[in-house]
Length: 318
Image (cartoon, rainbow, N blue to C red; front, side):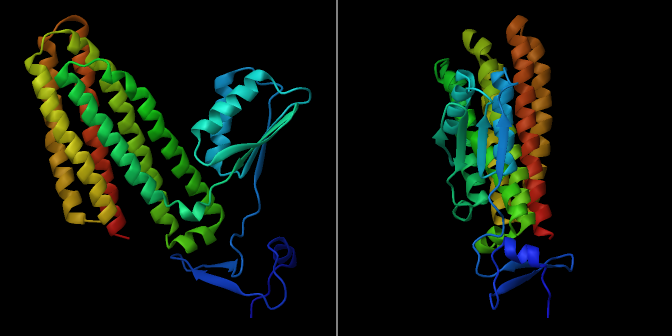
């Protein structure tokens, strides 16, 4: 027999003869949850006072922070009238963040609510989508260099925002799952697996950032006639993209042997990128600086891919 605290039972709506569930944890503890409830977590609301905020970026960062923290409702409030700046930032934010809508708007208050069913959006699926987006960005930016196309480079910032918003979503889901274990139970996932999704997600987000850096640094090279450096960076870049895709695949399939092969391949590509960095000295002026940064970005993508492969091995060893 287990005696439950009355205050807690009242909070989650438990009544006499209701069913509760017990879930054993790896550390030997038991998690108790109301068996008939869809969620044990109460509605979480974050209120942001806009009166003292005059910086758009600061307000936007607070909204992102509240979103990632997992709050169900975000309220922007003012003692007088909500500024047009705050209203504009709220509108822009809800168009970027996944699952949010402005539900109410008055002179002194804007209420943003999460409409997403967290149990229907698996973090691992979002990671797979991030992989596809980042892979396509890298492939396209290499093709732009090969085709001497500066117009195609202009889309990279916008495409990177799509990667960012998925990373926000996964970080948010990690916090929500930690606060409400019943979601993980319904999805058949454990918190370790979900936490690793966030680690892989953040790594892919950084790879997307390097696709943007490559796009910015390819411009000086495209303005020159094609060089041997261009040919080598395209060939090496494509090998690194292949490594990235393979590494995420080993994490998804929990293939330890393939993950180890990815790490070994990555070590070779890192050395090749370092050699390529030395060849940047053959160029002059702005192209030489750009070539050095390009080699550095390719090296970082290879290293991030190796990190993902290491996470795959760690997950197998649970």
